[in-house]
Image 1 (cartoon, helix red, strand yellow):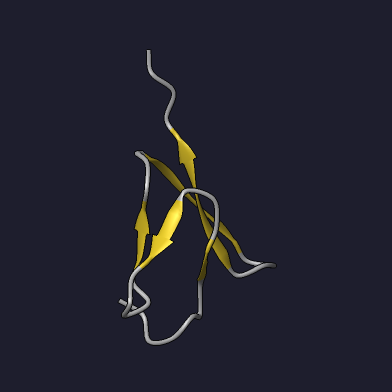
Image 2: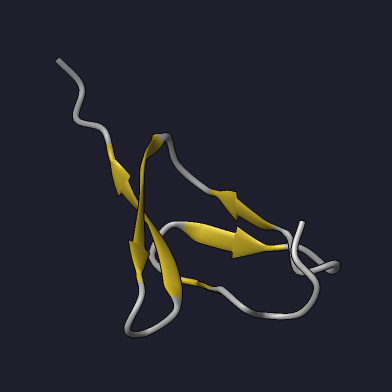
Length: 46
């Protein structure tokens, strides 16, 4: 968990009441350090 919004939710990421970030889809995590956002890149089905 994080205290406050050090990282903001990006694409396919949700945020809980206590600022917990969680994935909305299965995939790989990608951090955008310039924008301080966390994104999830979906995994393609085989």
